Image (cartoon, rainbow, N blue to C red):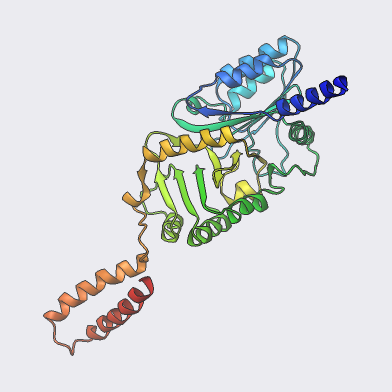
Length: 367
């Protein structure tokens, strides 16, 4: 009896160890956690990367290969608007005789950022292997070791490496273009009281519509981003009118892609909230319910939003009154001043009367 209890206890303990996760917060931690993971690999290293310019990672991969590890790299050949960005590292990897494959042309881009070691561990990242990643960008990575998730990530890597098709099934893995739209929308639509988002860019109309609807239904939604547009962003204006709070980063460039729902679930990975990222690219994000990870993400989010200038103070108004209505109010004020000194038979009088009626109608709706 004692023997069987010991076996069951060991099995239970092992399953807990397998399910452990660890959050990496950047630029706080720097490149050390990733370099250490490469160094600690015992048999194999499989890397999917979009942007790769930091040579210390290439050198560490070379050291691993020299020490007998099987190293394979799937690297985006021509990053968007930066065709030659990865050339130096690609040349180095080939000189090191590391197995390097360009992605399948069926994907618009391979934007995934994942490190697999020994077929038993994975680090799913929001960041590229670039110098800026560890200087002034807000990013995250999640170390996972759940055997079912690792198995699927490994299967997808092997298939993508060989330019073959594959089906995906794990509930807590989000793959673009396979199921990311459905799963991201589900996260938003099932939120009960809060959504917090780190977004480098936010432009997909379905995602924006779902966020606006959730906000109007009483869900507290906050977004931290790094838009540098000089002109007002119409999509942000639409969201703020729905009640979404948008913070513009001043201290970091927000490269992270994270959604935190109801303080108990988070999705983290390479997926931007854009149509191309969701429907056309190869991307990976992982859903976690780990209490410690969620707590760290929320603490970081709250600190970042507290240090940021809100979009309300810039050019995106959070008023319940529409932009069009504000414009009409200004026109009405000008018209009122004009009428005070203009005879009523002027042709413009009809236009000003129209503004008064429009204002009265819309003010009642806004209230």
